[in-house]
Length: 211
Image 1 (cartoon, rainbow, N blue to C red):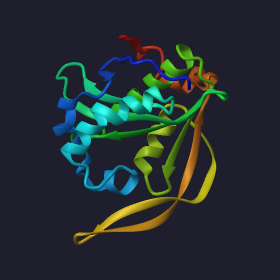
Image 2 (image 1 turned 60 degrees about the horizontal axis):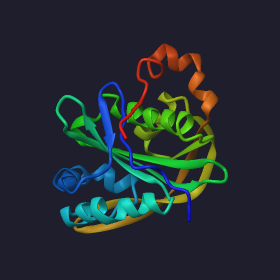
Image 3 (image 1 turned 60 degrees about the vertical axis):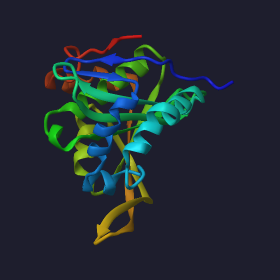
């Protein structure tokens, strides 16, 4: 039987990362109905409420139980409003390595929620689960995702040429084009960077488990 992540929740200063629930479906469908989500992710299009409910009910639990990764709904502490989605995938249990991807709702962008959520997951992975490497892959044109990688202390390792599909809409037709990916990595020692302490992304924003 494959190793797997526990069903858990992670709390940061402003956010709670928790398992998806079926009643997240309307908010998820609204969040994913965005041109940038279409362009930069490989999520289904259209991302319907029915698919969101299936993701919460069946797909995400299976993803975790089979050891492939884990999916977190990201919510605000104060309002419980859904602000994003974070997924770990392509997990290698022998190498103690996994890849992270993230989506932020349109209304929540620019508030620093994505770096806070990703850093909380990174701290949990390294300090609680014993992982040794976290990867981020950002499309060459996705500057917002690249800024998140930089803010959490990620190190750019190079370019994966023509390794991604960027999607766009032309009328009612989705048009695909190829894109390079920038590969970033984060190791446990990277979280001790003085720059992270100075910028406030470490120390004051520790994760707290809510099993």
